[in-house]
Length: 305
Image 1 (tube, rainbow, N blue to C red):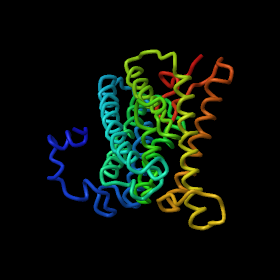
Image 2 (image 1 turned 60 degrees about the vertical axis):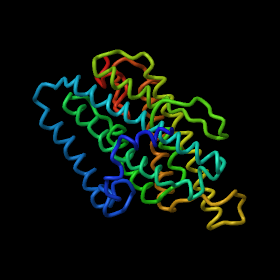
Image 3 (image 1 turned 180 degrees about the vertical axis):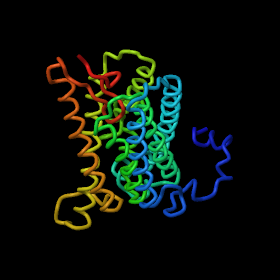
């Protein structure tokens, strides 16, 4: 029995209203721009407010709570990835590689539901920053921007129904697949397993020697993301606006969502490369190591003397 079908035997999915299992703009929670922008603006107000309140107060440890938070995200993301791989594999068997990435039929009801769960996970991940503020850790621009922009990115892709969404989400989720038989589907999601474990371990004060390689994997992840997203965007524009250009077929999704996805993922790559240079290639003496976009950098984000 498929994992999704097995879960449906124990979870009351049928009892949920339609707008909680399908993305319905205006009815599904956090599905309109005013609500999303207000929520993300509130996030910024809260974290900078906590920083101000904590300025003359001792830092909070919160290690146990922090570990519970990250353990929940790790296990939840792992399950979500397994469900997505199962669904995408079934589409690929029937449709082949290109249609799995680009055909509008690859936006199935199950994948849409998984995208919604992944989207809501991004709001839970905002608590990473709340913990850092309470622990009085330095928060670099990259961390705050990456967390808030990723929630916005997921929102735009749900609204735009971009068919390549599963590729980027899988890359950003959890552990897995060194290299599959699917041409072009080289998924280095191992990045996120290491990322979540890193955050979990350092919450207890552990020193992680492979943090530099984690950042390298994150950069690799964004390069693969961009290759897929730019490829899909090119196919769409070539098909719909410049048919004389060589292309395979249309790649489904709105142009606004595609262009915003390209812009945000490009900015991530630039910021992570800059973080890598600032953190690992400059002389270490008297340098500050800052928290990166996933809440990581050196294990603590503290100034290194």
